[in-house]
Length: 72
Image 1 (cartoon, one colour):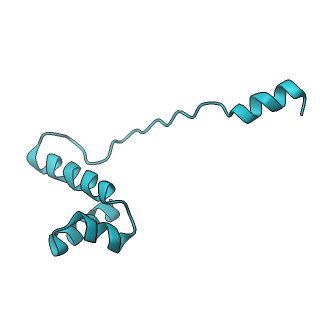
Image 2 (cartoon, rainbow, N blue to C red; image 1 turned 180 degrees about the horizontal axis):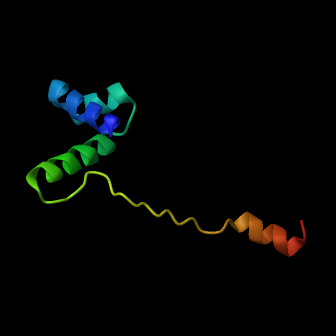
């Protein structure tokens, strides 16, 4: 959450996604995404800035299945 606060502060200072991104070594799209989420939360169109539960599903590694077939 502190990182998002830094993005907001930097955007208020510079007024540009590119300058914020360059300063924080992130993508301009990342800065834009977080600023949009903060704005939505302030306007009341969303309840939270970051989702509470993130479920990342990673597919099984192809290399593991090949190794299992070959008996490695």
